[in-house]
Image 1 (cartoon, one colour):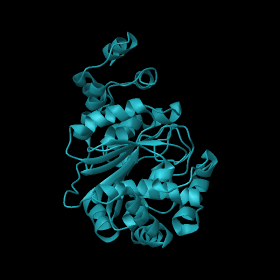
Image 2: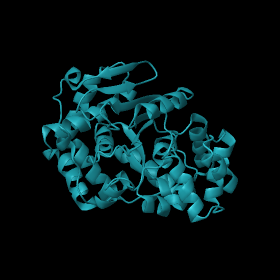
Image 3: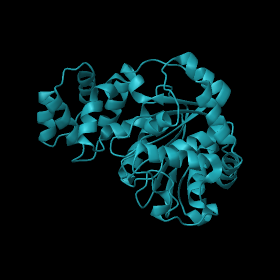
Amino acid sequence: MKALLQKLFQQHYLSYEEAKSSLMMITTQQVNIAQLASFLTVFRMRPIARQELEGFRDALLELCRPISLDQHDCVDMCGTGGDGKDTFNISTLAAVVVAGAGYKVAKHGNYGVSSVCGSSNVLEKTGYTFSNQNSVLEKQLDKHHLCFLHAPLFHPVMKAVGPVRNQLGLRTFFNLLGPMVNPAQPQKQVVGVADLHILRLYQYVLQQTNRNYAIVHSLDGYDEVSLTGEFKLVTPQREQVLSPQQLGKNVNKSIDLHGGSSIKESAAIFMHILSAKGNKAQNDVVCSNAGIAIQRFRPTRSLEDCIDEAETALLSKKAYKNYISLVETI
């Protein structure tokens, strides 16, 4: 690791092999805390290169606890986070709504590091119990179209770096890896990214796969469709810049999307919206993101129709009842 750090401090990029081996060393605890903190910090000081990201990704997948959900046609909805916007848990709510509409979701996630409340925090607070048992996750998908894969239960390196990430309290390249290393590797995916550089990186990487993906980025910096302005939507077929008005939605204000100041408050907001008590801005944002995921299953349908389907699942409380049933049967 010392040699790799010296190379990085000299402003050189790592090769694919070096990036992969560095994560292997971290996982097998061949790196001390000071070296690990330095390694993570370097990538806050410059953009990550494609070969570095791919090397990190492949290391995590190689070391990952194996799981197979191949018989299920699932979508993952996982953003990179780190946009600093302090929103409520939009992508997690959208995932629950997609499942409530009848489509299978295997969502990858973790505790918040640079945010008050990550997806795993809010799920745990609302009663979901994490598991890495294949049979448990398959049962949840069969009965409720929904399961959550808590990253530290599958990725040894996530567990190894967790304490240092928490102490730093900053976004690291592990935020970028989250959407890439879902242990189930579903063939459908919606990724939210916080800037255009990361969007291009993801586009290149996902183009090398056969996945039906969508990458979203709001041009004012949100790593999801915020409806606070125009957003970019990239799929294997096209790139578009869309406005809220084109989806038949009002333009939101940032305050409309504010999350809680604690995990308890964030969980209360989560359940308030899920139980069809949210305001129009909250509902529109959740359903717009959910609609993009539904369109991965229904590519010939318009995005507006897919959003309408998500709204029906949310406002009828179908998504709420499905989630409550899932939690109660764990």
